[in-house]
Length: 327
Ligand code: A3P
Image 1 (cartoon, rainbow, N blue to C red):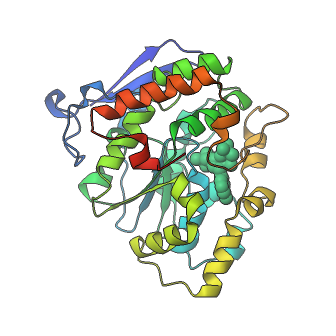
Image 2 (image 1 turned 90 degrees about the vertical axis):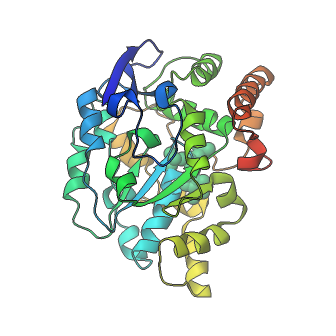
């Protein structure tokens, strides 16, 4: 059972917080992680009603499905392109003439804004290609139940919260989804009032499940540090054919920030501009680095996020370093 309650926020559209209560209020028994789920709320657009949550929760999966899950701005599109290529015999030709979003649809996209005139759940349902690579930004407890019950493959990518704050601030203000300054944004981010937050429960739940056989957990920082190693491990996880040296070289070049940013289809900026009302300087791929927070957040903002991070991770005996290394 899903509950959706309205909240106040500086988003330009109505926002709700959604919870999954499972049978008799026990939480989602289908998720392998056993914990008290009663504090796990996810902030979503007002279009994400309890009925919508039920549609997503009941989404029917197929044996060959692969789900790519993340909090926003963690390198989803980058990893989606890589995963799609591995699942499709490095079909660069197809990849360079269609948006990743068409090849790998975003399950709950239609709930993000009334400007999005499509039924994204139906699009995923109707997708004929095999295997399907389906993207979702939902936390573990709101994902389709069958993913857990039938142990579908999940690729999860996380990124350090300070860079996510910077990247998501530009994304949400650029797309007109949120209005305010960075101080306000940081406050609302740590208070769980920004789209998709709470950030840490999203990441931590998957981090704690990272040893499950059907989960491939990776970070943006690891992809930046050694993409070749990530490709080899992901390829094994997806049971894709081994790559020759030349194929690896081509793939690395294709996935470089510069190449994807320059490409019509690799960079979703143009497509987003055609669907949403965005600011003139809107750019989906901004800097593509680890540590953009260093010169984009001030001392107080960094300290606020660090203190909150410490507090959230302490409970699990973890530090930010354990998950992301030095950032
Ligand atoms: P920045 O805003 O820091 O530049 P998502 O796809 O989850 O929305 O993540 C978007 C972030 O991933 C953006 O970060 C974007 O630039 C970065 N990104 C996308 N493709 C990339 C690539 N090929 N190499 C490095 N970063 C990439």
